[in-house]
Length: 437
Image (cartoon, rainbow, N blue to C red; front, side, top):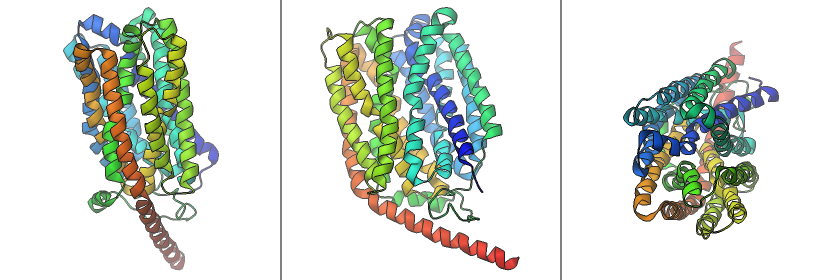
């Protein structure tokens, strides 16, 4: 199947729109948390439960989405996820009390768990040489989604209120779902692998439990799963609580917060794409390349985050903003490279499953992050709670990434050998078909 470069980048554009708007919808909660606390008369611990609820639901649904993506058409399932996003967000917007809001907002975690199939499908459009930078481009949607959510709140919250903003983003989810349903084609699994990309016919391999169990034999997967448990704590803490932190602990006004956060998000965006590009380049030199980039990012951001959050309360917004931007530059170094590494070492028919396990473990860890910070904030203050949770979990994340770096070459070698075997199988099918003709 020939795919024009124009169509491939159209697919990237559609997925960028899906992830950008979805991330903005997901991250809105942190921008309007003060309004929600005021309207429902809830404290920090109850507010933290809002973020935790959605993460718990997402964790539950990751294995299911992974299984479905590896069995059925991924594009259709992504369209379904976009529709679910629209409906659940709209329901949370009209919730009359805190109990119903907590339940409906938790239900948005169903579509939050839908990304493994998207990355699996992108991996069949783009091979290992460019996969990391495309994943890095998609990772831009997290920081840019944060900016978009902030812009929506600053522009619309005084005019229409937080409920109508959620109705707007939910409606956009339905629109994006239509684009995916009618515009995105599925591809044979493994089509972009170097051994298979030029073959006229590829032997079909779909999810089976033998292939799924073989994931347990991957040497680098277990430490990557464990680092994921700790690695997303800081990002979830910061996206959920940081707006409140800047208002309450730093005393910054909205007109100061926006340029500070805009600078941090710009730096994070540059870092995400650069990390994917650098991972691609180093992976061509050594199978450890992507994870070396990830490890460097985690270790550097740990030190910089500690310095930034430890700045005295009277630090000027300019100095604080510069330090925050330097920290943000390294925050997303691991995301695209870990996802690309999982594609590099797992069979195409279980890639969604493998990535869903990664995200399941991440959400199990991250689910407690907003609630834990909220509970600690009541006793030790929000600033100390954020600092403690972020630094400790980042250090643990770095330790397990180092273990994965040591183990990954053998997994990459096994994957390439398997793809060569499948290429011979596919060539045999093509020869048999030609002989039949």
